[in-house]
Length: 264
Image 1 (tube, rainbow, N blue to C red):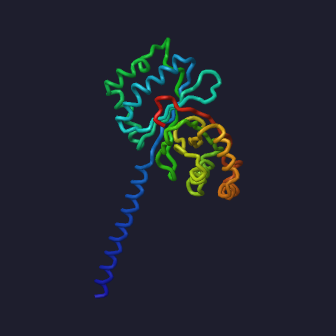
Image 2 (cartoon, rainbow, N blue to C red):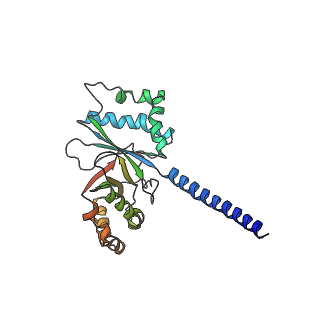
Image 3 (cartoon, one colour):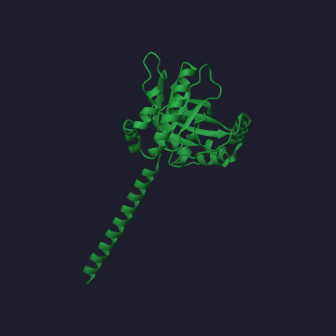
């Protein structure tokens, strides 16, 4: 009898363990599937003719086609204070890595997209639509796995890139944002972050990139002043392992404004 009871208890334990393991795995898969990926493009242009070609392409062809394929909230931005001809920054969200891999193939089979985008797609080599495209693929942070689109109102955007000395330093900075509460501090202080992303393919790796928003330049200055004096930030940043000297080698800040066709 004791042996039968033991076997029964063992079977129940194994079943429970199996259910628990299955639940954990299912939860992990769900979390992985819900994490967005972003393509961040920078168009290098030589004149206003190219700028118009690129902006018209997104307004008339790319944005409608990408929306139809499930890529919502396409951001299209120009520099707030360009040095010469502005660059165009484009932010394209994807619900998964698989979506990113198949979208271009699907665009190439869309006759409406090909027709509307022809001036850009078929621009001659003597008069190209742009000089070059710099492109990065980013994975959204675990603590902010999806883009948050700000309200439609006059505003400016700040795109910030933190470059790290090593991959391990980059992972430590990710930990600081996700686990130590840095993302929450940004939200609490009203920075209205649009996305936080780890660059997995692109230039200047290892780095992370994020976008925040302000009503204007005065609001930007006030928000960063509040951030620097925030008690929670002071507590987190005082941890020796999280010091900027260990984790960051260079910060690039670019101020942007949305174009008329931008959905962000």
